[in-house]
Image (cartoon, rainbow, N blue to C red):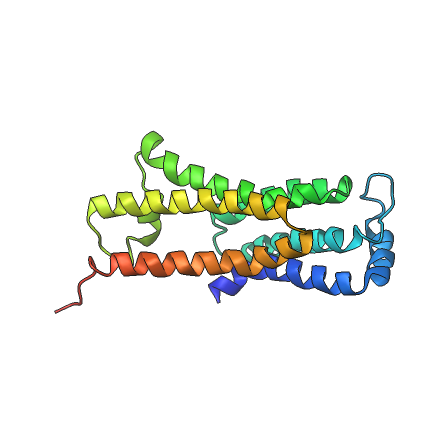
Length: 206
């Protein structure tokens, strides 16, 4: 359930892009009606409509996530706040300048922010963020926590670089597919690898 909640904006982005891409005339009419006041020059073209509408929906979905948690009086974690700030800035720039390059940069900026936070926190604040999130679920030796934190930091750095490569070397339709399925596959593969590595340190209770 938590995974679906986290992926909610990404899934909506994918669905809206695919639907509007299959119905470009209707997408242009809808975009011209609702987004023309937000777009520089006031015009939404046929080719721009799908990515602009998908971006607008992703912004609204991320904002809705934060509002939902606040209404339910639940904690909004720092990752979601960062994600909201980045999608508003880069998504807003995409819509205003009607330029898809901004939204393509969003995953890289987000992943690199995560990577930087993980790698710098132990050095500046003496805090292992992965341990802070996971130590209630498992007990590990200190060197393992250090390696785990570094591995996640490196993983997010690589994810950001992979996004740049796919975003600027392939058509936008392929990037949209990869943004959902490719990143999800990489994340699942990394988590499985991490679980196999940690299994040697986790003992069954006697």
